[in-house]
Length: 502
Image (cartoon, rainbow, N blue to C red; front, side, top):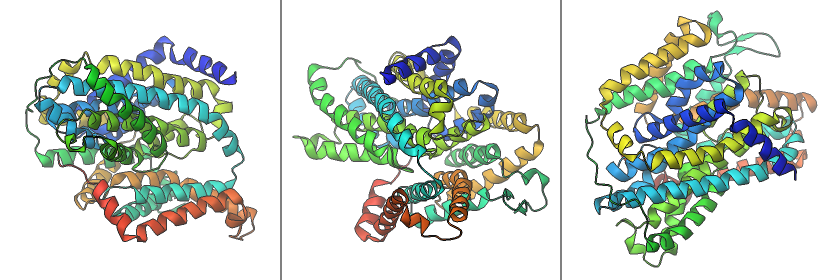
């Protein structure tokens, strides 16, 4: 009964005119970002973070959430039409989706992608609503040892599931942890790694870091690729699905939704992993495995459903435990802290309207995305033809305006440019920036809880073993470390997390 009352509260908040408009703006921008390869939700969320500060907390979060899961929808459009995934999670969709487009069935591929994503998003939203309350009750009993162990597990999982060699991901985590220690030590009051800059006394500002490492770095990388001014597209064909299409796609959508709902909880590469896993499982279960890669509709339905289910399920650990599974959610978590909201189990009791309003907005956003994706396919095709040389000056302008508007300080713009150049060099060496951001966000929280745990135990590290939940989390972390030692796992990891060149 409480669930229905909570959902009623959530829909009353999400259906307000202001929040509906912000949700629509977020979904529209997210779809456009997914369509345009090379910008990505992380870069856009980092650019729009300053805007969210002048909005109400719930309105800002609804807009950022719409960008986040809207980009998962938009990525399928370029994957199908031009064989170019707008998002990494849409790489698998290219295999059969573009082949369907070459056969004149792009419309059917886009329709099943949109409907499968809507079904998966609706199921994932229901799971969040049902699972959030019991999980938050468990999390309320977490103390500093449990939180320290949980954050250690999250960091290790992001290393294991990051793209590229694991030692590079490990290095990026440590770099993020190191930058997270900049500022004044809360226990001793001593300045750490400020190098005499008073602007760093309160720590490295998150906005210049995210805009630099993701926004400016992405612009430099795209300019280096020298993208073509125009892109060829295939004819759409009819949008409606045949009865045979529905018969083959429906089980794939259901299985993809289940896989995405499970793997979306994994920090780091859970969303990408779910799309590969859904595709491989569907191919093994199919009576016609030879059809995969040649335009099988199941090869579009399963990964697209898994993709959207995982992207929304990943809100559970952020909202209930304060652990962001992805870099995009790490930015949203930071936006919550700026508004004075501490992500974790207390959000549900302290800010019920925000918590349930955000959940209700996810389902409303899925409805908006179906409406945006199918009738506006022609608009997205035209958007693909916009030359990148016309896009990047506008993006840079918004970067500078957003950076300066936060603290009215030119130092933030300088810092973002420096971090952007550093991020570009790291990318040239094949380093993935997502573990770096997770290390930066979780590092200070890990340090704080580790210190508290050691103060409680008077310096005895056995407190992490004596408390059952902490011991289980540390055992899981040790299991992840052992996985990295296994040659077979390392080979499988390299095969799965390989990005298709764009």
